[in-house]
Each structure stands twice: as structure tokens, then as C-alpha cells.
Image (cartoon, rainbow, N blue to C red; front, side, top):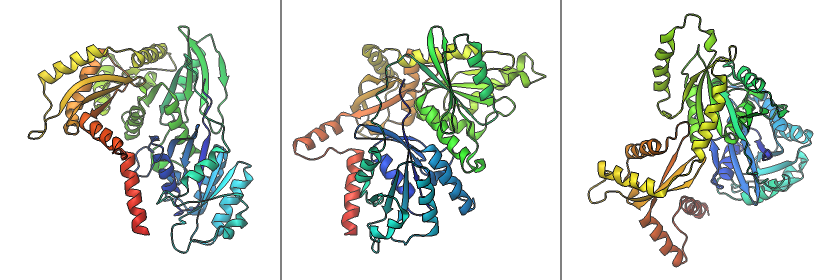
Length: 471
């Protein structure tokens, strides 16, 4: 089993550039993992890989409720960051003299006995102070950065990886990891205990800590299964500072680690917006999904029609993941609990099933003959062939020309046909398009000694133009 990735937290008072620094570090690595559910804020959790090291990067600025009293929230923010993190980055504004808040942040970070790195941000601005002005904070490792202009980020990443172990290569084990996701009090812990206790072959019980999800390893049908129980996510406006905010991060980490997620909903409180957001996060992460309606035993006056009346309402709410199976359970009576194991194993097998390129291309050509893709005048998309490039989730790439004109509805049409061909129930599938004209143009640029036109290339050119403007 793979070891847990280290966590690096960015802390500091408001307006020092924490979020800008976070976005620069994560986006530069092309590894954005998740967005905080239901907000317009920047990402709060990202996975970064640098020089053979991999770690979670946490933006505590995104965890702070802007309506909270600053003093109380900053204290909680720092306290929980020091508990959750393996390395702490303290960010200060290099254009301002040290404040009491800066000293408080540094003192608490150092008190944690964790490795601490001081980042002097905004060093590109006129009036930025000498590093000597920040010696009083007592942090030995100091890095000067400009998040806005991507200066100093390489040095910062180099300093971070000095304090964390090299990336642990994940063993190709047969363990199926299943995460229980949902709002608080929807029955996750009861289902967790029921799933764990129902089996007679308890392999290991790893106690949860303040920074990890609860885990238990069992065996079902001779297959090891690791269950991950999360604390639950509230609506962003109802999340308290501190520990509950970090439980959100643990939920996102559990989703990233899992193969299949059980999204639990209380039958007495169905179809909330947060449930939809969680389903969207699981879908975007490419994980298997089962929608689980819990506490079925709590409905006293149910009859044969109750189930049939609720099913279409739930399906309508989650119409953006129509491939996710729906099941009604009760941890009290044990109804359908064992079926969850069967569902998880079936979904995992579908995610890994092999496909044949010939079958895929026969399907593609029939789809084109039946419904040719629309485009603009003299610029119709041409879909030439399709290949599968990855599994877990299944990923398909379609080659052709003028592919930027393929309408989203046509992509959905192709996805539906792929699902019907290979029965991908319970798992998202990813569809990419590779334009042969763009590939050919990039090859010509490489021959001429020029960089290929990619998203990273475009961002680099934008940064260079910004730097030229500043100078």
C-alpha cells in the first residue's frame, strides 16, 4: 500500500499573497486536484510533484471564513495548520514591516517543532525590505518570492522537498479502496461500522488521527477492501474555523485516494446542493460513484410505492451523473449493506476492463454515419479514429481535425455510445480530442527550434510579457 503523502500548509495573515503563491505552485505543476465545494474561492487543496517528491499543498486562506473575526480565525487557522502539516510555510509581505500578527504566526509555527520556511513575498515591488528586517521572526530558512511573476518558486519548492521524503512509488496491490463521503450525520460512521463488523476476516484496524480519515481493512470474496470514513462536509457558510475546515481537506484527500466513493444521503433530507457538489467533485476526480440513501428504516409509513416515488426525484437531481447507481440502505437492519461490496467490486472491474480499438472505431464510424458532427461553414470536424489511453477512470482519445468545433452535446452523445458498448455503470469516463493539424504545427515548431504551442507555453509567454511590462 502506498504511504500517505506529506502535507505542506501555507499560513500567514491576510493580503500577503498566500492564495497567489498556492495557485502558482500548483498550476505550475499541472496537478490541480479539487476545488472547495460551492464557493468562488481559489483551490484549497492541490497535489504538487517536484524533483521526485509528491505532496499535498494546503491554502489556509481558502479555509478562512471572511466573515469571521480576524483574530479568532487566524489563531484557529495557525493552530490547525501546525497539527495537520508536515512542513509549514509562513508568508509575509516584504513591503511591510513586521506586525504583531506576523510575530504570532511565526511563534506558533516554530512552537509546533515542524520544519518552517519563511517566504518574503512581493519582492518585485518597489520598497520591498531587506531580508535582514525579518530575522527577528527566528525562522532560519528564508525564500524571497514574487507569486505574481513566478519568481523564487523553484527555490521554495527546493526548500520544501529538503524536509519531506521522496515520493513513495505505489505498489500495484489488489486492495480496493472505498471512501464514505457525505454531510455530517447522514450515517457514514454507522455504515462504516456495519460494513467492517459484518465481515469475519478483519485484517487491520488503523486508528484515525486528527489529520487522517478512519480506516479499516477487511476481506470480501477473497479481495482486500480498505474502507475510508470521513468526518463529513457542511455547507461552506456553516463550516467552523479550525478542525472542521481541515476535515474538508481530509474528505478531498479521501476522494483522491479512493477507487470508489459511496455518497451517503439521509433519506429524511435528500437532494441538497452540497450532495450535488460532492458528486461533482467525485466525478471530476474520476472516481467510481454509488449514491447511497441511508436510514431507510427511519421511514415509518413507507410502502411498495415509496421507493418508486423517490427514485426519479433523486435521479433528476443527479442527472449530471446518470451513470451512478442508486441504492437504499439501513445500517440498523442491514438492508442492502452487503450489496455495497458487490457494487464496489463490479464498478472497479468495469473501470479496469480492456477495450478493443477495432470495436471502438466501428462504434465511432457508425456514430458519425448516423449523426455527423456539426461545425461551421467549410470547417466541419473530422473524427478519424479513437483509442483508449488509460483506465481508472477509462480515458479515450479521438484523433482528427477541426476538433475545437465539436459541440458539447456531440461529446455527450459519443460518451453515451461508449457506455452502452462497454457498460461503464458507476464510473466516469474521460474523453479527449487530439487535433492532427495542431500536432503537425507543433512538430514543425520543434524542428525550427521553437517551443510547441501548449497551455503551459501560452502561460509562460504571458508571464514574460508581464515581466517586460514591469521592467
